[in-house]
Image (cartoon, rainbow, N blue to C red; front, side):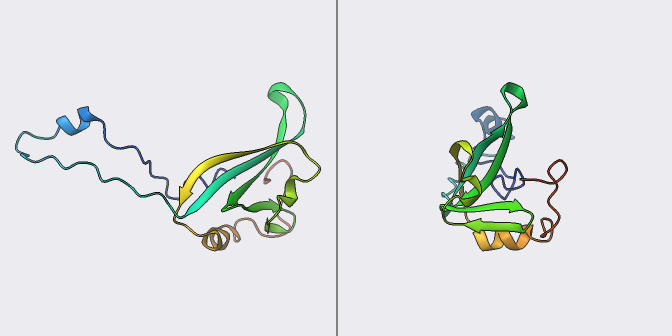
Length: 127
């Protein structure tokens, strides 16, 4: 699930003042860092406890894009509108990750070849 991140891999942090001051003295004008607009689609992580305790707790995770859940199981990349993959599990939490301009359908198209049906493995390739 960590593949998702912010999809671009780029940080949204503006340059620090010390970085701006380190420009050569030949530059008379300093450009203000461009303010990046917020993406269109809200991205959240959903996590619920499968079992264990302390540092040995196992979790099930999925990603939500605009409230629609995407998860990986024996059927491949799946989606639901009601957090289906977390039903019956303990202590489900939703954590806002941020926003993206990448669509959910684009994410699915990108991930499906790597997470095909029948390739789920509890220890080696899981949610």
